[in-house]
Amino acid sequence: MNVCKGTFRRAQNALYFHLQTLCLFTKYDTKTILLPITLLAIASAPLSSAYHLPHVIFWIWFHLLQFNVSNQLLQPEEDALNKPDRPLPSNRLSLPQAILLRWCLVPLCLGLSDCYSVEALYVSIAVVALTFLYNEGSAHRQHWLIRNAVNAAGLACFEDWIPTVLTQLRRCQYSSQLAFFTTTVHAQDFRDELGDRAVGRRTIPITLPSVARYTVVVPLTLWSAGLTMAWKLDFAASISLISFSLFVGMRYILFNTVESDKVSYSWHNVRVVL
Image (cartoon, rainbow, N blue to C red):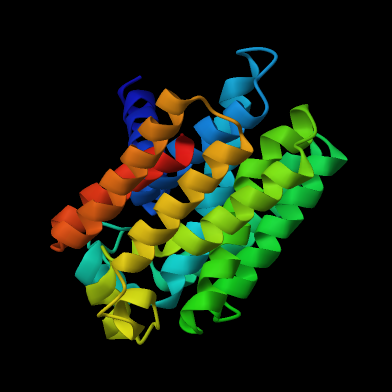
């Protein structure tokens, strides 16, 4: 009996360890990607039943895991500087194990999506392809415009899953969201500037240091003003949205420490959801 209890306890501890390792791959994107994209997608296509919500969250998280494992394989030394508690720099698993996990996740993501619908499978294929293009295809090391475009397309794919499966998202709405992501997604790069410099990335904060922070406040404010007119919001709602966007953008200009940039990016993701 004691032997069985010991075996069960070891298996339980091993399972907890591996689940925690998977969660650490996505830890830093839970508040900045998983939560905002889930809320934004649900707002675009309201769920017909609360039963769908766990499916939505798991699908987005599982594909985010696939992206993050791929991304964190490329430059572990960057994470040693910026995020040392991630699985590779903290030695929770070896590089060969992470590579095996990365490629096992691809068919698992496709298989999961196929269980829902052909449309979900198409979105999954797009996420997998963009992940390969961004990471193994080295788009993350290219000019900031290419990096932003691929990054934005990936985020838009995440958001598009719920409307694709549950209802049809209007083309004009999707186009505006893709453009919004393309012109503002670099807001995440300020918090990671130290690590990006170490690995030679060409992000906006690195290539355009004198104007980089203005490239957040200007498009955020202009997009908000334009969208309030396109959506025909009333005066109070329009002023509130524009003012909040201005608040987020000005944070980047007035507060420029790493910790401040992390907080500013969290506020940026609140704006994305709005």
